[in-house]
Amino acid sequence: MKKLFKNIMLCVVCGCGSVGAGHAAEPAWPAKPVRVLVPFAPGGTTDVIARIIAARMTEITGQQFIVDNRAGAGGNIGTGIVASAAPDGHTILVNSSAFGVNPGLYKSIPYDPFKSFIPITNFAESPNLFSAHPSVPAKTLPDALKLANAEPKKYSFATPGIGTTPHLAVEMLKFAVKMDLGNIPYNGAGPSVVAHLSGQVTLACSALPTPAPHVKAGRLRGLAMGSRKRHASFPDVPTMAESGYKDQESETMQGLYFPAGTPQHIVKRFHNELTKISQMPEVRERVEGLGFQFVMNTPEEFMAQTRSEVEKWSRVVKNAGVQVQ
Image (cartoon, rainbow, N blue to C red; front, side, top):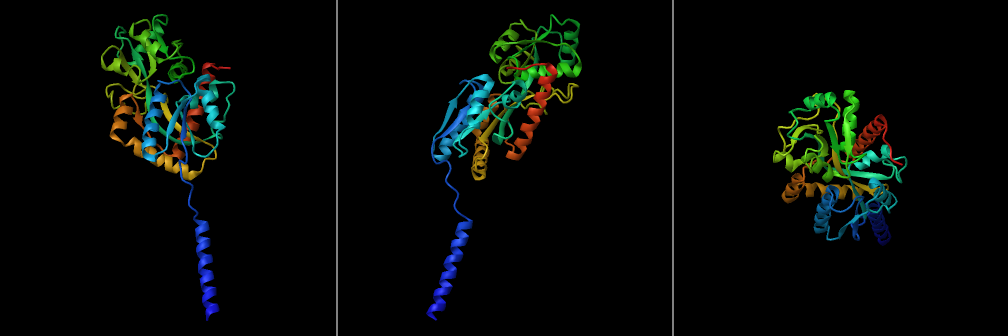
């Protein structure tokens, strides 16, 4: 009897051990400070968004989420650093639409956009805005293009620089309408909008956050948004599709990525926390105040979006004949 009891207890212990082994506790995350790498200089929109997320994640987890700015080569240097980082969830990339543009724009980059990362989510995105100086006698984008076609020296587009999505949005439109649209690239959104405000350049294409306050104040006229639907803050500005130009969407995304190989339970946990952060009233007010709208798609949806963005912008870059060494 004692031997039978001993055998039963042995089976129970072994069985419990098997169950325990099959459901081993996942390692705690984060286990140490997390580096949130932004591949651009401090002060830009991507940097601001990264700092909003980092501050909230620090509060939620009790671990420090530290923003690390590594600017250079249009974002390629910092992005390459994350690609080679340990896949343990303690290095995160926050990148703009440069992630989708650079594979086609640069002759070589230090990472593979599909194999080097696990996309987490497109946290928020903001459309590019086609705008006109109030002196321009055109209330719509089609009317503005008619003027540009008739007097190309007088009507050109100011953009934030070669290879930016506003620059490529103009190139994409140029290819679609078969017109030689003048494109004057500046060194950043600020200088391009200043030139536009002064009337030095009559037309412009910029990521929405920079010209937004000037459009609201009537100092610039919004012609068309590169979004799929009208922007909540500018309901009177039509989309490119509504203006008669299909497949001309161009938005600046704010995407988050882990290095490839990061465990799925960490990806899931971080995505869940980001969802909570995106629903905080103070975060919504701040991000929407920057001209962005929340997306918060799933990792699978964001992977599909990333592939679509890389393919689209590579095609635009090729058609425009633009490439950076």
